[in-house]
Length: 78
Image 1 (spheres, one colour):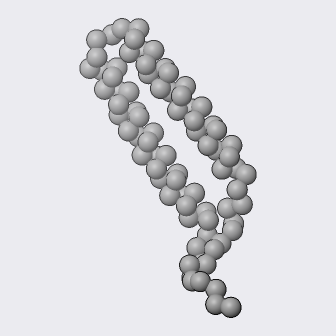
Image 2 (cartoon, rainbow, N blue to C red; image 1 turned 90 degrees about the horizontal axis):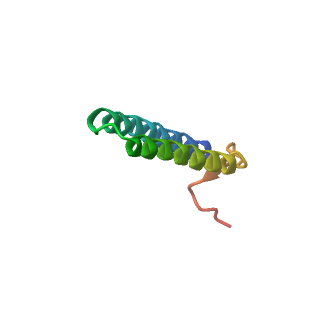
Image 3 (cartoon, rainbow, N blue to C red; image 1 turned 60 degrees about the vertical axis):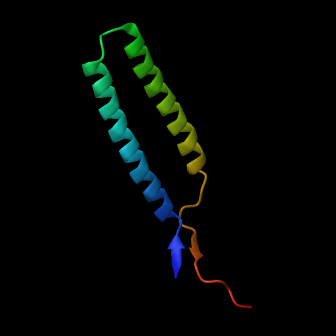
């Protein structure tokens, strides 16, 4: 049985989807339930900039991987 490396990429994209979903949930609650101040908007802005920077770096490195590679789960017997 061989597994394509792209399977791990799709699992990672599911993780990213939930990260973005929870990020929107948390930012909504920060904006809606906190008293309006520059600190709240600064924290949200830094969070967004930091997340974009981390995702850009990660996808830069992930773009260099050959996702068509498959590997076998069974050991090779000589």
